[in-house]
Image 1 (cartoon, rainbow, N blue to C red):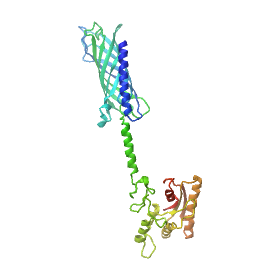
Image 2: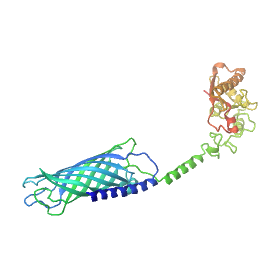
Image 3: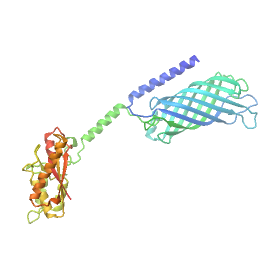
Image 4: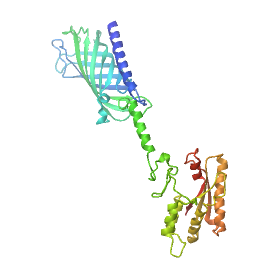
Length: 411
């Protein structure tokens, strides 16, 4: 017995060291490690039987119950017990014997070791083997034995909680003094038995998947993939203006509009309308009678945020240059008497939220007063105080200047 204990301890230690070395290579992921396994089937003793007695081709029945702990997704330890009922072949003298066993086994997840995930996520294969003790018994006659066992378990994943299994295991008993029928002394110094079972595995734990099915990646690979993803994100150019998003102070510039090195539409006269848009409107969409601008075009530009009124820091009065933008909205409202407009005030993030809400409302009201003085009915003008605009870099004065504005939405 002392030799058995020492052997089991050494086997467990080797398995643990191997598994721990493997874990160091793997990225940390949450997965379940415990499982309960129940299976039943048939057995076949291979040793000679007492003359005059005979086993059938297989003997029903076999029951196995085990608890398994996976150290990682490739190696684990299993403790299990088994019961084999042995009976005679038809038309031969009757007998009944039983075989009980308890084992500690190492488990290797061949599905992960052999990278089954490259071709299936539903099939798995476990190899198991270990040492234990057992007893061959019939009535009051008992024969205590030591055993070694090894086997293969095929798995079919039914869900993240259950797997169907089919197992084939060979067991070799040492110090077996009686035949499996327990009617006479053993013909050999050891007994051999084969078990074939089907069963169900239930996975314990709070994580989504069990170690049997999780695919771990090397930490260095995960870090490299993250760096590549970050670089790809940084180099996106959503508005296709030639300035990548992480450097773009105005990431929604209209396609084709000339921008500066920060991705901002160029507005040299600072009237709230990008120069190219202003030139486009003036050259192509003004009518021959001088001043009318195509309605649908101006509505799309206004609602797209390309016509805005800008303000200096902590001011509710527009900059003198940007008041020209109001004329486009005014022209549209005069030529579309049934239309209304939302006047939307914005502020940067400097100052308290409450103060910036009031400031954005004051800016919108200032623009409203200009339109009222131009004889646009108050019922057509709706004030919206949007408060702080957090879409730009708070530490950049140039970026903050872009969000101190009033925009419009024509309805």
